[in-house]
Length: 256
Image (cartoon, rainbow, N blue to C red):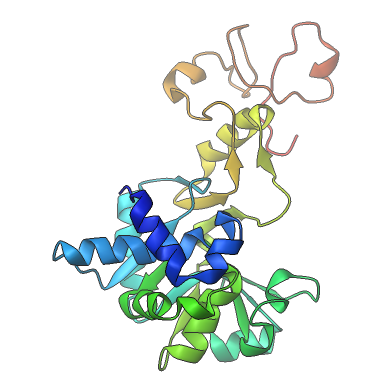
C-alpha cells in the first residue's frame, strides 16, 4: 500500500510529535493508522492487523504463521515483544508472557509517557486490534516515541486493553540495539541458522545481499560432515583450523 504526500502531510498535521521527530520514531503506528483508514474507505475492515518492520525476517511459511498466531491471540489488543518493570509485573499484566524483558533505567520509554505506563513495546513484529489502532489515530495529539506511545494508549485509553507477548518459540532473535545480523559478512551465518530454524522471527536482519540461496544447489558442495567439498561453496564461516588452509574449507558452524 502506497501513501500519497498529501496523506502523509495530513497525518503530520494531526501529530505534532511526528513533525519534529525522525520517521523511525513514529512510522510504525503511522503506517497502521493510515492503512486502516484507507482500507475502511474501501469498505475493508479487519479485527486484527499485524505490523512487521522491513528488517524483520521470518523463516517458515509466513501466511500459515499469521493465521495461527491470530487465532492464538484473538482475545488480545496488543501482541509484541514487551518490556516490563519486573517479573511480577509481567505475570500480573500479560495474558501471555513468554517474550518479555525487564525495563532498564536508561531505556528510552522513561522519557516519554514513562510515568503513565507499566510496560513498553518493541513493535518490530506486532499484532494490533482494530480498536487499539482507532484509538491511536484519535489521540495523535498525545503521540510520542512508538515504544511508549502504543502501550500508553493501550493501558490508559482503551478500556480493558489486553496485552500479550510473542511466544519465545516464535522468536529466533529479536534485538533493538546491537545489530547481530548486519552486513554482507553475516549473510552466510544467517543462512546456516535459517536451515534449522522453523517458524521463527529474526530482527534486525540487514544484508547487502540476500541470505537466501538454492538449498539443493548449495548442498551439492558439502561433504557428509557439512564441510565445503568444492571451491564453489559459498559459505563464509570458517573454523579456526580451516582459516590456516589456503583454500579455506568453509564449515557450517552457527556462531563460529
